[in-house]
Amino acid sequence: MTAMKAFDERLPSEIDIKSADNLREIIAGALDAGTDGAKIKFANQEGKLAEVVLTPSIAETFIKVLRLISNGQGFHVIPYKAELTTQEAADFLNVSRPFLIKLLEQHDIAYDRVGRHRRIKAEDLFEYKHKRDQSRARALEELAKEDASLGQI
Image 1 (cartoon, rainbow, N blue to C red):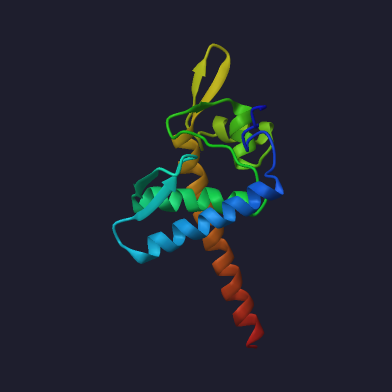
Image 2: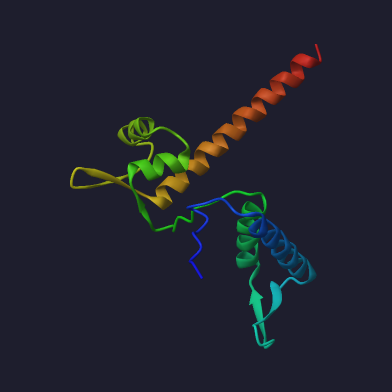
Protein backbone atom coordinates (compact mmCIF):
# COMPACT_ATOMS: atom_id res chain seq x y z
CA MET A 1 0.00 0.00 0.00
CA THR A 2 1.41 3.39 -1.00
CA ALA A 3 1.29 6.40 1.28
CA MET A 4 -1.31 9.01 0.37
CA LYS A 5 -0.17 12.60 -0.10
CA ALA A 6 -1.54 15.16 2.34
CA PHE A 7 -4.12 17.72 1.22
CA ASP A 8 -1.50 20.46 1.05
CA GLU A 9 0.05 18.48 -1.82
CA ARG A 10 -3.10 17.43 -3.72
CA LEU A 11 -6.81 18.00 -4.11
CA PRO A 12 -9.29 15.58 -2.51
CA SER A 13 -10.54 12.63 -4.55
CA GLU A 14 -14.26 11.87 -4.96
CA ILE A 15 -13.96 9.26 -2.17
CA ASP A 16 -12.27 11.85 0.09
CA ILE A 17 -15.04 14.35 -0.66
CA LYS A 18 -17.86 11.91 0.14
CA SER A 19 -16.12 10.60 3.28
CA ALA A 20 -15.42 14.12 4.54
CA ASP A 21 -19.01 15.19 3.94
CA ASN A 22 -20.35 12.13 5.80
CA LEU A 23 -18.00 12.66 8.75
CA ARG A 24 -18.80 16.39 8.83
CA GLU A 25 -22.51 15.60 9.07
CA ILE A 26 -21.91 13.04 11.83
CA ILE A 27 -19.79 15.43 13.91
CA ALA A 28 -22.17 18.35 13.34
CA GLY A 29 -25.13 16.16 14.36
CA ALA A 30 -23.34 14.95 17.47
CA LEU A 31 -22.37 18.53 18.35
CA ASP A 32 -25.95 19.76 17.97
CA ALA A 33 -27.21 16.99 20.26
CA GLY A 34 -25.25 18.16 23.31
CA THR A 35 -23.44 21.17 24.68
CA ASP A 36 -20.48 19.26 26.10
CA GLY A 37 -19.04 18.52 22.69
CA ALA A 38 -19.48 15.68 20.26
CA LYS A 39 -19.39 12.05 21.40
CA ILE A 40 -18.47 9.72 18.58
CA LYS A 41 -17.91 5.99 18.61
CA PHE A 42 -15.36 4.43 16.30
CA ALA A 43 -15.00 0.74 15.52
CA ASN A 44 -11.66 -0.77 14.57
CA GLN A 45 -11.32 -3.58 12.02
CA GLU A 46 -12.08 -6.19 14.70
CA GLY A 47 -15.29 -4.36 15.64
CA LYS A 48 -14.01 -3.11 19.01
CA LEU A 49 -15.67 0.22 19.86
CA ALA A 50 -13.95 3.26 21.28
CA GLU A 51 -15.78 6.43 22.29
CA VAL A 52 -14.16 9.79 21.69
CA VAL A 53 -15.43 13.08 23.08
CA LEU A 54 -14.59 16.09 20.94
CA THR A 55 -14.75 19.41 22.76
CA PRO A 56 -16.83 22.03 20.92
CA SER A 57 -13.72 23.86 19.72
CA ILE A 58 -12.10 20.67 18.38
CA ALA A 59 -15.37 19.59 16.76
CA GLU A 60 -15.76 22.99 15.08
CA THR A 61 -12.17 22.82 13.82
CA PHE A 62 -12.77 19.36 12.35
CA ILE A 63 -15.99 20.60 10.75
CA LYS A 64 -14.12 23.48 9.09
CA VAL A 65 -11.43 21.13 7.74
CA LEU A 66 -14.00 18.58 6.60
CA ARG A 67 -16.00 21.33 4.87
CA LEU A 68 -12.88 22.29 2.88
CA ILE A 69 -12.33 18.68 1.85
CA SER A 70 -16.00 18.07 1.01
CA ASN A 71 -15.88 21.17 -1.22
CA GLY A 72 -12.94 19.63 -3.10
CA GLN A 73 -10.35 22.02 -1.71
CA GLY A 74 -6.87 21.25 -0.49
CA PHE A 75 -5.51 23.07 2.52
CA HIS A 76 -2.35 23.68 4.47
CA VAL A 77 -2.17 23.83 8.27
CA ILE A 78 -0.03 26.62 9.70
CA PRO A 79 0.81 26.31 13.40
CA TYR A 80 0.22 29.55 15.30
CA LYS A 81 3.86 29.70 16.46
CA ALA A 82 5.37 28.90 13.03
CA GLU A 83 7.83 31.19 11.30
CA LEU A 84 7.18 31.65 7.60
CA THR A 85 9.35 32.70 4.70
CA THR A 86 8.30 35.76 2.75
CA GLN A 87 7.01 33.54 -0.08
CA GLU A 88 4.94 31.41 2.32
CA ALA A 89 3.50 34.56 3.93
CA ALA A 90 2.72 36.08 0.52
CA ASP A 91 1.00 32.86 -0.55
CA PHE A 92 -1.06 32.84 2.66
CA LEU A 93 -2.23 36.44 2.08
CA ASN A 94 -2.68 35.77 -1.65
CA VAL A 95 -0.43 38.68 -2.57
CA SER A 96 2.82 38.92 -4.50
CA ARG A 97 6.11 38.57 -2.65
CA PRO A 98 7.19 42.15 -3.61
CA PHE A 99 3.90 43.48 -2.20
CA LEU A 100 4.49 41.55 1.04
CA ILE A 101 8.04 42.96 1.28
CA LYS A 102 6.50 46.44 0.94
CA LEU A 103 4.13 45.67 3.84
CA LEU A 104 7.07 44.47 5.94
CA GLU A 105 9.17 47.56 5.17
CA GLN A 106 6.20 49.81 6.05
CA HIS A 107 5.99 47.95 9.39
CA ASP A 108 2.43 46.78 8.65
CA ILE A 109 3.55 43.26 9.61
CA ALA A 110 6.24 42.49 12.16
CA TYR A 111 9.16 40.31 11.08
CA ASP A 112 12.58 39.13 12.16
CA ARG A 113 15.77 38.79 10.19
CA VAL A 114 17.66 35.53 10.11
CA GLY A 115 20.88 36.39 8.35
CA ARG A 116 19.73 38.18 5.22
CA HIS A 117 16.33 36.45 5.20
CA ARG A 118 13.10 37.77 6.65
CA ARG A 119 10.91 35.49 8.77
CA ILE A 120 7.32 36.30 9.66
CA LYS A 121 5.66 34.80 12.71
CA ALA A 122 2.37 33.17 11.78
CA GLU A 123 0.63 34.87 14.70
CA ASP A 124 1.66 38.30 13.33
CA LEU A 125 0.49 37.31 9.86
CA PHE A 126 -2.87 36.10 11.22
CA GLU A 127 -3.28 39.37 13.13
CA TYR A 128 -2.55 41.42 10.01
CA LYS A 129 -4.98 39.33 7.95
CA HIS A 130 -7.70 39.69 10.59
CA LYS A 131 -7.29 43.49 10.65
CA ARG A 132 -7.20 43.63 6.84
CA ASP A 133 -10.36 41.51 6.59
CA GLN A 134 -12.17 43.70 9.15
CA SER A 135 -11.15 46.84 7.27
CA ARG A 136 -12.40 45.36 3.99
CA ALA A 137 -15.69 44.33 5.60
CA ARG A 138 -16.21 47.88 6.93
CA ALA A 139 -15.43 49.33 3.49
CA LEU A 140 -17.92 46.96 1.87
CA GLU A 141 -20.58 47.94 4.43
CA GLU A 142 -20.00 51.61 3.64
CA LEU A 143 -20.26 50.93 -0.09
CA ALA A 144 -23.49 48.99 0.45
CA LYS A 145 -24.93 51.85 2.51
CA GLU A 146 -23.93 54.36 -0.18
CA ASP A 147 -25.44 52.15 -2.87
CA ALA A 148 -28.67 51.81 -0.88
CA SER A 149 -28.91 55.56 -0.33
CA LEU A 150 -28.33 56.25 -4.04
CA GLY A 151 -31.08 53.77 -4.90
CA GLN A 152 -33.59 55.74 -2.83
CA ILE A 153 -33.06 58.99 -4.72
